[in-house]
Structure formats: structure tokens, C-alpha cells
Image 1: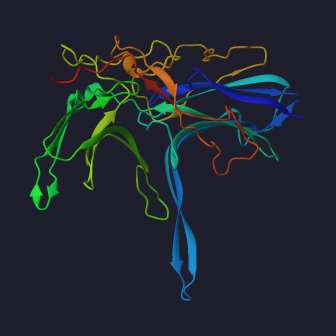
Image 2: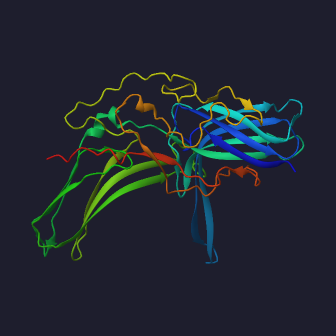
Length: 387
């Protein structure tokens, strides 16, 4: 007897926010009997975690092989904000009546945060957990993960407009005689792109050698670097993401392939004004017209706003946006009003679990699985290749 249902809902159907914006949501309970509690507590947390193990085999003094595993872990905490929606940890017991009860919560995110990420050996994750604080009993927790995006505007750094250009050349030796070269020239129009965009490449090959060129392979790679803080010393940036374009020319015989790579930048705001136009000059950010709109200007470090509560008779708490509402409003859409709105797509990498150490095994996760959403711009074409 007690809780029949418990679920967390946020104010956009994508559960996606930009750093500096405000997260509004609600916890909805359905009780089948009166519930005595000290209070209802909400905690927002942003953190990164890495974890993997390495096996090592060594011989002991008797010559026997012994294996040992070393666990590597890394942790970074970006913020943690908590407050009571109802009651307190020192107050008297409160009796919650049976039926449907809804409690609103809200939190302003810090203005500088890394984007959400889920990977094989670690994650950057943002969660909200609501706890039913019960005296002399186990607390009852409900937890949800949401996406945070660190806006990277490619228009604000001129280097992202620079073309990609690299050349490769190789000569092949036979009986101490060098052949004429195999030359490869690779070009792309710019060095900054956004998810969903096409990267046009031009590859010019001139093979003056007597070695046959079998195949040209092109790779767009995401390189993830995981770092540990234990057992080594403390470091920052335990997860780094880099992107590069790699071109490899496979040749015949016993010769080594010709290959090289060039780093590119993947942002969240695409380059605009590339064809026959000067680069755009962002206008001054505009304050939102009402508190319910996402903030454009950076706000103070993460903090709760004024939470609210509705009784079981109300159906739509303040600040709640019904499913089917527009996609999250990106801060830069005020700066570039003609920019096509992005389409938010779910990452193919899903978190195995959002349970942390110390979380109850009976904790409710809402929803059960989590994958971040990212803005994509398939409708915006990059500039043409340089002639």
C-alpha cells in the first residue's frame, strides 16, 4: 500500500536544454492511501564518469602466471542543486492525502556545461531525482536523465570558415631506385560542420609510379579519449571528443598505404552567410518575454527558482508544456532569425543504466532508458568546394 504511480515530466517533449536555460518540470504521484512524509526533495546533478579495467599477467617467484585486474575510474562534478518541494528534513511529519498529487520544480542551469554524452567507457550526464523523504522508513526515489547541449556557434570563430586542404605524396623504392611519386590532394570547403550536414570532399590523385592504386578509403571519425582520476592523480576533462577526416590510399604489393588525417570541428550552430555574403554579426541577445521562456543570456550558476504545487484537481501545472509542443528553443535562434530550426535526433548510444552508486535498487527511473538528443541540420547545405 502507498505509491501506485510516480513519474517525472519536463516542459519539453525532447527533455533537451541548452546550458544557461531553465529546466521546468513536475513530479506526479498517485497514492492509494494517506502517506506520512518529512518532505519531498528534488536534486539536480551534472557529472562525468569514466570506468574501465585492465588485466595484467605476471609471473611469481615460482614461475606461475598470476593475473590481476586494475580498475580505472574518473569523476567530475559540474553542479549539484537540491531543495525541498514540500516540508524539510527537520520539520514535522506531513500527511499527503490519497489520489493524484503534482509538485512543480524548476532549476536554472549553469551557463557553462559540457554537452551530454553516453559512451562505452563513460558518460557526461544530467539528472533530476525526486525523493519522498519518509521518517523511519526507506526513502522512495524517482529519477530522470535529460540532455544538456553546450552551444558551439561556428560563426564566432573565423578559423571554422577556413577550407580543409592537405596533400600526401609517396615514392616507392625497388632495388634502391625510387619511382615517380603518387600524389594525393584533398580539399573540403570549410573546417566546421554540424550534425546532419554533408561534408563535400574533392580528392585529386596523380599516380606517376608503377605501383597500382587499389582503393581510396575515406573515414569521418569520432575519437573519444577517456581519462581516469584513480588510481592516478586528479586531472580535468576526463572525456574529450575529437573529430577528423582520414583519407587512406591502398596500394598493391608489400608497400605501406598512403594515409593522413585532418581535424574538423563539429558544432551546434552552422555557418551562415557563406555564399556571396559577409559573415553575420550577431545582434545583442534579447531577454525572454516571460519567465516561462528559456533564458538567452547566461544566468547565475545553477539555482532553484520558485517551485510550485498543484492539488489533485488541477490537470496542467504552471510551466508545463503539453507533449506535441515545439522543439526546444535554442538561444542562438534570436541571434540568427533566418536560420532553419534544427531537428533533434536521439543518439544511437543508450545508457545501460542511470543508477548511481548509493541509489536504491527500488528507485524508479522515468523513462527506463536514456539516450541524449542532439540538434541536426540536414536541410542546411555547406558551401561549394573551392575551385
